[in-house]
Amino acid sequence: MLIKLDESYRPLVHKVRDDAGEWLSTKGTDQYRGGLDMSQVHANIDRDFDAFEFVGWKVAGQVVAMLAIIDPEAEFWTAEELAEPQTYISRFFVVEHGKGYGSALLRAVIDSARTQGKHWVRLNCWSTNTRLHEYYLQHGFQHVRTCDIPGRMSGALFQKDLRSS
Ligand SMILES: CC(C)(COP(=O)(O)OP(=O)(O)OC[C@H]1O[C@@H](n2cnc3c(N)ncnc32)[C@H](O)[C@@H]1OP(=O)(O)O)[C@@H](O)C(=O)NCCC(=O)NCCS
Image (cartoon, rainbow, N blue to C red; front, side, top):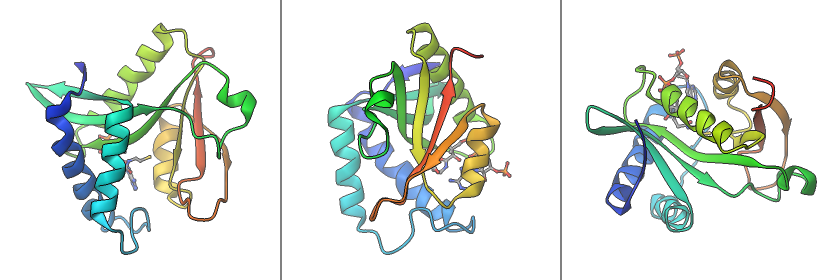
């Protein structure tokens, strides 16, 4: 079941981000690596939590996956793209891997966006993580382009066209 996450879920978002860092360190990617200041990472999550909606996927009374629906980032997308009706996702995490919880949440968010008349679901993700890119391709997204902006390692842009499927 798709739910909106209220304030009580803020610590869980911090925790799944911490866990994702540990998990990714076993996946041969530099995503989320490199001496990050975790208090800054949490502060960035808090900024999004205060400004945007977070949604979760609930199974047997527990939130098992979550993501934020944010404004598209102007440094990555053209003015024309920014103006299009879209749901822009970020901070996509699962509590437990290998159960399809993330996929279920992603499908629900896509269905919801389609129902709302949006034309696109879009996101940016880690530029060099080809396995993550495959994940989005497997979920019906297309790679738009990869932006090389200093200090922004998440410049791989993906979108799903809701009018064609
Ligand atoms: C992305 C995510 C929410 C998807 O959840 P899910 O649909 O339940 O899928 P799983 O976690 O079981 O992963 C499915 C497959 O994708 C791979 N995958 C997913 N995210 C990946 C990543 N960031 N880097 C490398 N591989 C990744 C998994 O290794 C797994 O591969 P396998 O089937 O060969 O074992 C979850 O994998 C996650 O929390 N990843 C870490 C955080 C992250 O990268 N979020 C996306 C930021 S854009």
